[in-house]
Image 1 (cartoon, rainbow, N blue to C red):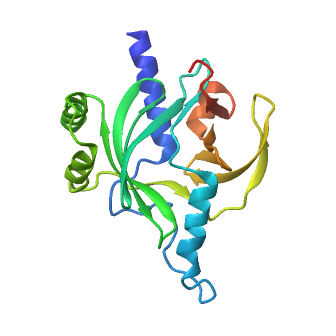
Image 2 (tube, rainbow, N blue to C red; image 1 turned 135 degrees about the vertical axis):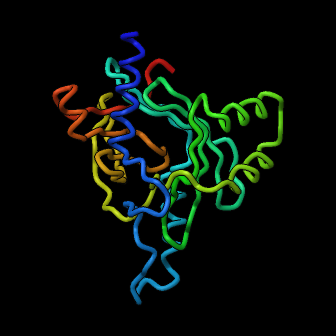
Length: 215
């Protein structure tokens, strides 16, 4: 029971830090408006950022001892939509659909199906039985979006960080509520920093998750 309560508290922390926002509500997703000088260059600039920071590279971020972290494997991409499988807090699995919007310069999570839901079980069964991933993506992206959460954008200034391994990297930060995702050039996601009040109250300070050393 204590272990279950601990995992539930971690999931609560993760969702509160990431700002799980219902559709049609205000979010941190950048405006699609562009200045006159930007014109049609914005989509091409965003495409360059996608190629440079590889945000659709599989990742598994882990923090020893707290249960914080997140992983995502990108299973299939069809035009601007992506089907992904992952986990939150080393505890609960999910399937997600993400939308790449080059005009807006964003990748946004539009659908999330958590473990033990009807949709999750149906997708899992279909994959286990060898169903076509493109057909699955087409089927489930037609559902009403149940999430509107930013995953990647290139609107912030790149910075230098040092990983816990001592490696120095140039990274692009993406702020999502009280969580910061760091994408490295040619590497994809390399760090998640949890800065929310609930994390600090529980663990005493901000927490950092990086590549899972047990993989």
